[in-house]
Length: 265
Image (tube, rainbow, N blue to C red; front, top):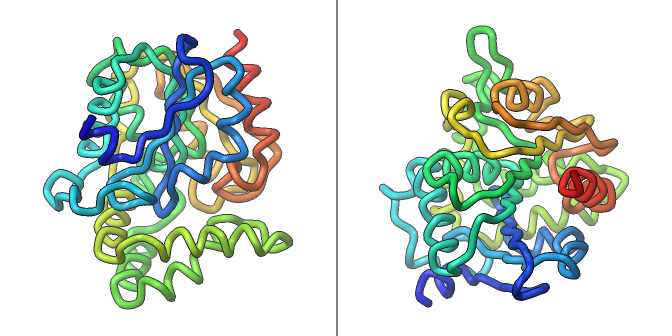
């Protein structure tokens, strides 16, 4: 179907088993799940996809108005599920896709059995009584640098996001993933991501959720993960011993263990 081709949807695992849908974060693509998703193929129908503008998705489908908010990405998820004719599913969202899943489950709760939110952040900018991890000035400077020199920004920020200087190959992979995106689409997605505010959406999600927090994450600090957990009506909080914002690459075994423990309950 057109929507499945547009997002380069790949289905594996057990055809008639419960479905797990994996959604990648900003600057990434579905290959970032290659150390996690296979762990569930013996027990689940595993679905991977690329957001428009990432990986092998159709860049021509990018629409500035649609993707000016995370709602556009959430609508894409719902279209994919409708096209697959499956549900309810277990949605696994990393980074910004965690909030994409929150919005999708808020709008169509019947399509979601559980949410697994890896490194979620409903608001990256500090606010009165809220710590998002960045000041407004820091985000403004980040976006300005991105606009001026996207490739240079990618080479600088990717290793910081990964947080694993002792494993530089991971930072190099994330840099390459960032640089593979169309710079204009990446700039738009970055603004949508870092200027989003979905705090008010959290209490409206009744789907059971697992919030997975890395112990040392410069993008989504522990306070943010706790905030998300406290405001989701049916959530479980797990902190894994991992550094950085991408445990699907840097600590996949710990992430899989936390997910399996949660899904077994």
